[in-house]
Image 1: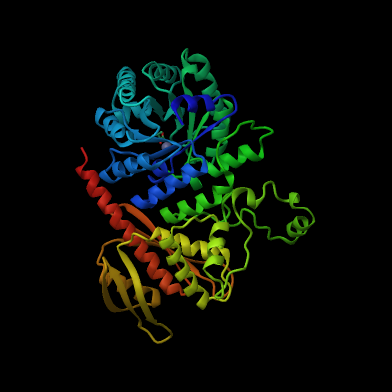
Image 2: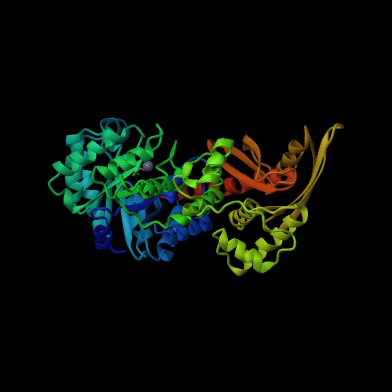
Length: 522
Ligand code: KIV
Ligand code: ZN
């Protein structure tokens, strides 16, 4: 899509969806994605109909730059944006990263609120205005499509905000984003801000206005929709609502609110809603960031009816308790069809039904793991298959893998674990004891992979029902103020625990490399 078409599409009722899962989303503690995971997410967003993909913050590290450049080269349909502060180096780096995109965008931002200007920037309003003009002009010399954001826009004095917006548009900004950076605004206030700025700024018709809301008070989606009512025609959001602190407005919630309540929200997006559930699972697996069970639209319980009264109503007529169908967001009903006698073709069509498109190698790998699971587990549910495929995709590039684990547990301690890991293609075995089988297993990992990271969370849940259900284990590790979360699945809780711990360690390694890269950045 060209800038012209983007602007044309942003007319009257069409609202552009700007996804920032790979930038604001990846910024949240513990949600680091590897290079390959970022490409996979970008491909999915593009296929799902996202209009603009913010692929990262190129100046932040070499890894971020490479990821944005690679996303820019492969995305077929969407605009690809790279984020930049107002400095020349940031803008040039962003321009370099997106230059091979079919539709490149530089997104540059600067704080405009009194508290940010005084304490963070230590600049006067006049200096900030001059920086707005300079940064946008520099970005426009590199690309035709430039977005300018007034960081902390909702705590900015309205007269100064109008001046900044007018200056940015005069310098060539084609999109103006007024973010609620700290999640402070309310729907009425946000609506009024857009209305006022659009009415007062003389050249406001030359740009598309954009909303960007954080969820600190749980109002991100409500504020987003209010901003659209106030005239914004671009929505910045993330899959599963991940992002700084309490996160950003969730893409799936915004899209389904517009679709389901089109009577009072008369807008359209280009998103294929039937891909929302898969997008959520893909991002949850890539970031190892769990989706809360009662999360709107994509949570495991979002379409589950438990109480007898609700079930009775649903059996009589689904509309008694359902305002949208699970199928409309791509969430198929749990079914029990796969087992150890199922063949490759059945498995392939099951994957297709669940929304997966795997290459031949990935399919073979997933099929082998499915067979191993079906040998151990009587009923293989859709959730089991999703967990198995997601885990395979999330860990395909890990440097360390669990090869074998034998644990001796019971009333007579100390419990012991014999563990074999594959580390960079070489196998290493160790035996350790501990205060319980989990402790013994984690001690064995520490013996093979010495590290200082602290265990912050160890959580076990079941993927499905029954005593032979797969365990889903989450392990959160913290090192030097940085936290990462890893997940593991297996019918054996201890094997799942070892996988989860190792998944976190693999993530920490990626994070360390990223930080080392950032320290070398200019
Ligand atoms: O929240 C915010 O203000 C941002 C900007 C960089 C757009 O993420
Ligand atoms: Zn943000």
